[in-house]
Image 1 (cartoon, rainbow over the protein chains, first blue to last red):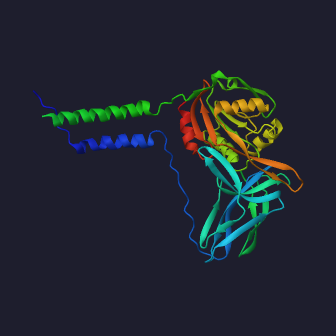
Image 2 (image 1 turned 180 degrees about the vertical axis):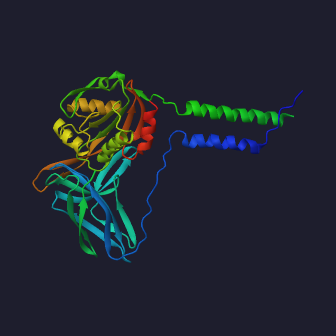
Image 3 (image 1 turned 180 degrees about the horizontal axis):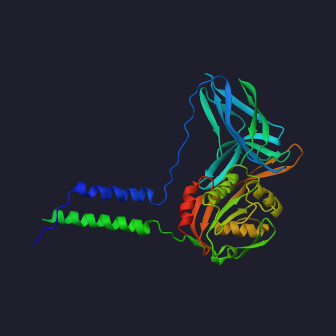
Length: 161
Length: 198
């Protein structure tokens, strides 16, 4: 009688790895990549990567950017002003409970020394409440950021979807 | 000796598990069936729309928003357009955006909103309706909302903002729910992969 062939565990390894690979990626696990923040190299406060969503007059819009504090001490963003809307505020979207999103005003925001704070969809954003006139792709929205130490910083944010 | 036999058995189990994963592991399961309701709504052009009757026959990607939410909701709407664009602008898939703020989001307002995203065109439809009908839709699809806070503008107008579920639904040709995603944060490649299975 022929004895069953002895299978080395090493020979099973490819099948095991393939099986695990199918489980882990077979049903569509995404490959999410995250941009690494740029090295801190400069002075004062800078704003980069800014943009604003289009909006119809009287409606809301949101603006996004990266604020970098190059100084050795923390600074505080105490407010944002703009003639483009009735009210311009710092807001934050957050998950109140599982699957339930809320939005709240952030009265002021610390920008830590030698750090970058990101305003991005689903998180911190500039909230333009009741824009004065329709803003469309290609427009520029002027805003002034008010910092406790640095003072005022005027920036133009391009409008895009 | 029993040990080699056990290893043969083990290897067969692995093969069976592997094959079952390949052939059935990614199969779509029906999570809900919307054929038990008939909800009359209206689209951005003022044309009547029935949920789910007017969705049948094609797969559906459906998001839920209100216009005065420029952050999360804009991201949901933009996500639907991104899927449409990355799939080569298919015309055999319904892309639906429904508001849960019908008091403010009239057909006319939705039409302007749609045009901001280059979505005031087929196969996109933006839905609103009477508060009762919209509430019925949101309850049936599991979208929860409540007023988060109000704000008074300098001219005395009171504005309200809403807490809301963040979701996109994938519904099949038979009005059956296949997937329920976190809307704003769902990578479009996942939505596309799942759509292509229908």
